[in-house]
Each structure stands twice: as C-alpha cells, then as structure tokens.
Length: 180
Ligand SMILES: CC(C)(COP(=O)(O)OP(=O)(O)OC[C@H]1O[C@@H](n2cnc3c(N)ncnc32)[C@H](O)[C@@H]1OP(=O)(O)O)[C@@H](O)C(=O)NCCC(=O)NCCS
Image (tube, rainbow, N blue to C red; front, side, top):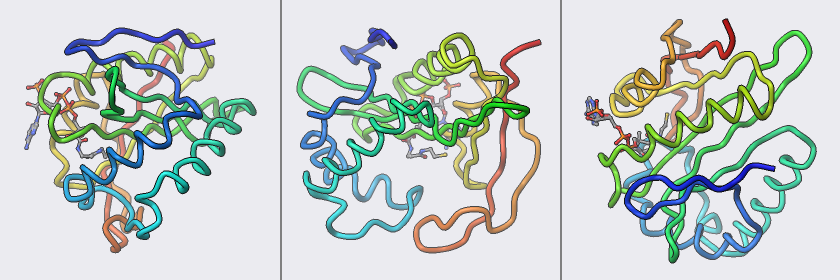
C-alpha cells in the first residue's frame, strides 16, 4: 500500500486510479505540444478517455502483478504529471525503469524533483529494488538535472535507443544504486 504524499503547490503524489482516465486524457490534450518532442508518436485515439481507460486498467494490472508502480501528480481537479516505474525485474537484477513528465504550467517548481525523490524511496523501501534506470534524450537538460539532483549517475550513451517523436534517437542513460 503506497500512501499519498503531499508535495508543494497543492499537488499530491499518489498511485494512479481507475477514475483518472478522463483527467489524464484532458491533460495529454492540453500538453500535446509540450510533450511531443519527448514522447513516442501518439495516435489520435491516445487523446481520448476511452484510450486511457484501457491504459489505466493495464497499468493497475501491472501494479497488482508487481511489474510496475504507476503514480500521478494530482491537484483536486487535474492530473498534472506522471511517474512510472516499469519493467520491474527481481532475481539477480532487482531493477526497474523510471519515466516521468509534468504539465507545462507547473514546470520549474521543483515538483518532479520531489516526486523522483519519493519514487526512489518507494523503489528502495517499498519494492525492495537494488537499482533504477532512466534514459533521456541528449538535449533534455531539465530531465538530466532532475536525475542528477536525485543522485542518479550517468553511465553511458545508447545509440538509437528509443523511438521518440517518430525517430530512433540516442539516449543518455542514468542509474541509481539504491543500497550501499
Ligand atoms: C523534465 C521535467 C519532468 C522536469 O520537471 P520539473 O518539475 O520542471 O522539474 P524541477 O522543477 O523539479 O527541476 C528542473 C531542474 O531542471 C533545470 N532546468 C530546466 N530547464 C533546463 C535547461 N534547459 N538546462 C538546464 N537545466 C534546466 C531547472 O533549473 C531545475 O534545476 P534546479 O532546481 O537546479 O534549478 C519536465 O520539464 C517535463 O515534463 N518535460 C517534458 C517531458 C520530459 O522531458 N520527460 C522526461 C523524459 S526523460
């Protein structure tokens, strides 16, 4: 059970809920231009409540099975960001991938830095992982700064790593070891 955490500026960091779908669709519509350079190409139906009802159900199934931890940053009226641990792998790896974004209207307030600090604790103390990994585009300096502030280390550049904005693009890879 992951308890909601109050961040600054009236934003709560909590687990995704089934009834978030409509608000997620509204926020993705509002932020379509803001997120386009950093996201995979989105089909038009991505910007519908129906698409997010399906995706939310998948994410909550992944939470139940231990494969993911889907979190949102929420105000009383809107979803203003997401943080997701995905690909949780146990055994010799005990690792997961970290992804995140925030609404353009609330960037630069320290919210994602606070949320990433919290998800690191959830990964360490709640899930019991050994390591988190995140990848950024080479020119995503804001994202790199968030990772740096949370104690992630750069460990290499992966060529043509993810198809972002329709192109296979190189990524800087960062990791954080969660235990000594
Ligand atoms: C990356 C992102 C999540 C950051 O969220 P945020 O809430 O604005 O982050 P914070 O306010 O906690 O911190 C941002 C840091 O980046 C710095 N920053 C912002 N733009 C920068 C730039 N162009 N160059 C260098 N640093 C920059 C800020 O000054 C701040 O650092 P500081 O606290 O030392 O001053 C947000 O910009 C976003 O959603 N971008 C689009 C989606 C995306 O890139 N997702 C991540 C994919 S890897």
